[in-house]
Image (tube, rainbow, N blue to C red; front, side):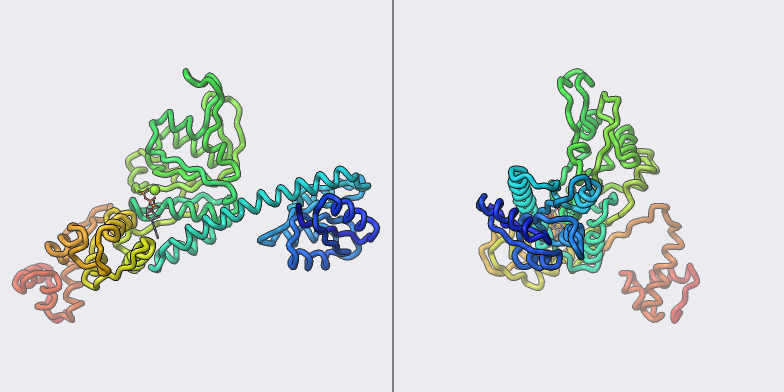
Length: 449
Ligand SMILES: Nc1ncnc2c1ncn2[C@@H]1O[C@H](COP(=O)(O)OP(=O)(O)OP(=O)(O)O)[C@@H](O)[C@H]1O
Ligand SMILES: [Mg+2]
């Protein structure tokens, strides 16, 4: 049975409603005006509110609007004078659950309160689950580096909107994790996020997965099937590995983004869809556009809110925090020796957070000691440091470079950083003094410059 608040300035009317509902086993609260009703709602948290719309002072509509902002809000049923449907519609647009016309019918009153109470329970259960998921997603999300903190800020801001998001980053950097966080923090988070890995399907199958099909669209299509885009209505669609979509599917997706409608495979009718799209990829889309495998117009449509997750090797603050997090999550408390931590931080982590997660899991399970030492680490972490202590790797820019210019700039920088002392500059670049001097002279760089 529900806790119901009855709001009406007319005491007679109020008492009738109270006694009818009390006879059904509900527990009743009553208020003669909106202000009193609001304080009752804050203090006693009723599940259902029945309110007259027209009252002296603030109208019932104000009550609807004010409660719409609450974290735990009751379902509101408004009561209108016969014939004033427009105000009832306005109230429903503002978030009211339903309306009743005066004069009230006993049975109708009982039924609508019962339905409103059920709606409240359903919604609250969903809310609790969602709060639980969001908590899990946020508490276990390590973001110590400035880059990750900045990303969480963006996530917070975009969650409130319906804008399309493109999450990019190497494999294992947390793209899906971020997508889920955006979804569950958004208004759409009441429904589960739908996701699909575009690389996992051959072209035609991907299209029927996404768009669904009509009966008889192709051999084997014995019944109409609703696609993911349609079934994600009111929710979010996560398109993972979006770069692996064929050009023809890309064209269809572009249409969805532009027109906000789809056509099922084999269908002639357009169906409007209400979805938010979050796409992810670890591929270089600019390169794919150049190669002609990705449509540039689709790229612009997807890239409304770009989120770039940096590789783990570029955020060492996160590495250390993640190590601590994975250890504490394992329930086997261990400390990491400074030398071991140095190896962990120095490793390139090509598999990013996923690789670190796996390594830490292996160590916490296998090692019985309370301390993690260098020798507990997998061989690839140790080898890298022994054989290549300072080979940071240099990525040639996409447009290439002129080697001589590059060389000159590196030599000049080394000299500048060594305050013009050539011997120091040579050391900085791992060369002998003679080699450095020879090369520097080639470019007219002199000691003391
Ligand atoms: N900042 C983080 N804090 C804690 N765990 C993280 C973080 N980022 C990623 N993870 C974990 O790392 C694993 C990989 O993350 P996720 O699957 O989101 O990566 P991805 O970028 O989608 O990878 P892929 O490109 O391979 O699909 C998951 O188990 C995820 O929970
Ligand atoms: Mg992923």
